[in-house]
Image (cartoon, each protein chain N blue to C red):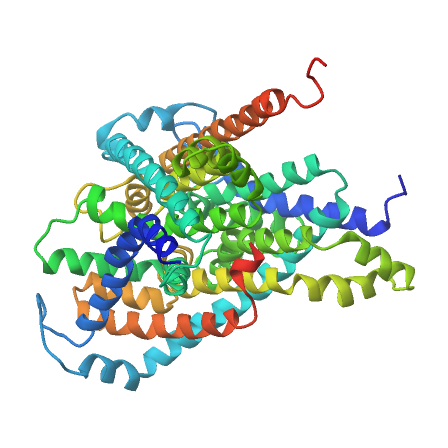
Length: 279
Length: 283
């Protein structure tokens, strides 16, 4: 291998600084969440304890965070499943031109770039004017889909741009029905990307704030609850909650990465028996 | 042809339905309500231009829009420089695919955690008694704690850069990974220096990625209200905050009118950018 140029070392330092910039603040609040009972929102640490984590389990200290956590979790799962199914169908549809496909494409782009508060305001207005009660599982659910679907679809477009149609042709030549082609050829090939779409669907919903603000009704999701806390909670319990939700997000990301890794291994093991046949 | 169109419609119908109900209809509703009138506690259907008239003749509107553009411009410049450098490092200086994937994931993971928590996490850094102030004092750079670190334009832009640089890194990295490495060898063979290769080969070829990153950052910063509210301690305003204030006062028609103007501005800007890049080709 040729020696590294000097720019490599400069850029490595830059990249390290960037990572510190990205992760430093989160790590700081993770440390501070272990403040002793007398500690405040900044250093120095006044002892080390689990005091603020214990506080998370007391209603009067933090309000209904466990209720909002379970709502966010269920909503995340709903959004995840819908995003995956609708994105795959949309991705398949966009492989061929159909009347109105350009208009629909621009609608997707609009959905991606529209300021979130417009969705919140618009959906909120429609619901209130038609006398429906806003609820996280109806209006909130739909509002979040306008944010997760564009990401899911962009991933699907990228996947199908690289998809080799000869696999499908081969399947059809062997007599597979259109459904069989999708079920036994297309879906297994795009499976790892679907896990990516699912991860996006869940985490973007789990962290979504602006689009749920006016559309979730009287039962808050977790980000709304946390935001409410920032205005009236001035103790490290806020950091404890932040640390816990971030840890939860990291666990979710880890689980998804593990699934991708396992599918890829399984595929490497079982995918092809070329060259292993007994002649 | 006829049959493929029908299959296409069937496959796209759930998507179309969701976007019609939760995107197109809300936009239509906002446009309609922007012509309505409001009393202190209720809104009533009408067709009057009062909301727009008030907005367009008020100097506050122009100042707030100007402030929003200021945030966009500074954030864009910072995220572009940082994002390009990071993507360049990952794409051209990291030699194995495994390490590229690992480092790329390290850059994208924060995107999948809560924005609000990431904003909160700046408090211990920037506060009056925060890490930045104590470090600066102990180094003898300043004698008194600096007040403008938290709850200022500085902290707003810092948070924007912190939250949105990933939106530059990802598309630029994606475009860079598709650059044929032999082009760079060719440039070197033709006697180009490192800088010349960077400016005359890599940057032009990376333009589509830069455009997509720009679209993301522009849309996110233009439409933001929560970062500005939280990081400025409600001391600065942008268009999103203006809308949110009206909503808090139940002045939905006025909020809608501002929202329409914001949407038109964002769509015009992004429509212009889209002329320079074919998103579907770049994916």
